[in-house]
Image (cartoon, one colour):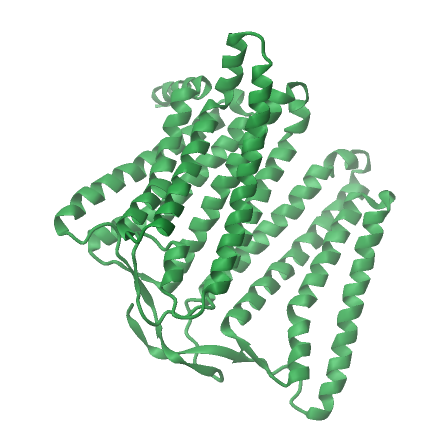
Length: 483
């Protein structure tokens, strides 16, 4: 990396309310009392609403969420202040300050959105009382809350990433290392004669991925026959696949063209964050699609009731929230690390394991978190997929006719192929990074996972799905007529 001309600071000083020793006890008692009253009072409200079925209404649903957020707001700020008063240590590390700022912005934003939702609820109840139950349905209330969480996290993330780009010179405790501002992405090859073929190959793969997935999204959106849960999830998967390749490939193409392999610390952190988000979304969407096929084949009579539009939207929003949360967690943990020795990333993008290898500070907590989250968010969805397909196979085997078995299995053949490709290449990345020291093999395996798989998904669904084929033909036939 290119060293900057500044010293890296590791701590801020929170001055608080007063420097006078005689006022510290009074301040500690005051804020401890306020904190306990806030937590206990809001907990009592949540327990009262949860235990009384008469209060299971939209108004009290929003109120219980507001009470939870209020507890989180004070827990983000007050405990640290109380510890500082007790220990007389007003220092807070850069990473802890960034985390505190991020979570405070999340919960403050949630307070704002929840108050808005409660105002809308009162508007409907008073101005449209006869339509209140239909408008303020449980699905709409859940969507409003989940949308509030998502927007608050995105806003907080944006501000946090912008702060990481800043340098600080002030009353902080200086560290003993130089701050670096750039990583070097080595990519695939150092040989000049291989740059042209690599650029052409990845440019073609990127364009095929973007155009193919865009065509699927347009075909589904333009054909009312495809406005079903299965194709709703497929259109979301296509959008995520475009985002996955757009997170990594354009930077690599620019690096090959300009021969500049440097990437700033903030851009590397952002690239790593968004790749984790979209890779996690791929995982969750494939699980939701497996559940959809399970309900369609094993419970066909209840399919419309179970896979309602509200449930489908909730599954997608839940996938976004979990992916944003765990990616934010990993990114904030990376900000705690210092990079003062090697600065070359043996990869074509900022992959989390590769970045952790370059840290010169202790990464034990980071690796524990990586394996813990990977286990939970990797094994649990895969377990759900395997369970769904075990039930699907059991139901298909009970179908008497061979034609009926083929028809039932054909509805999930494309999805099963994509699942095998996704987890197969993902397992290849894990084995290549843990079982071999060859950086080239690890990079190729990651390219299969991050670039080739999103490119193949449109072909799998168009080649094996008659509905998509017909929708694409109708879409293409409309283009000349519209001109």
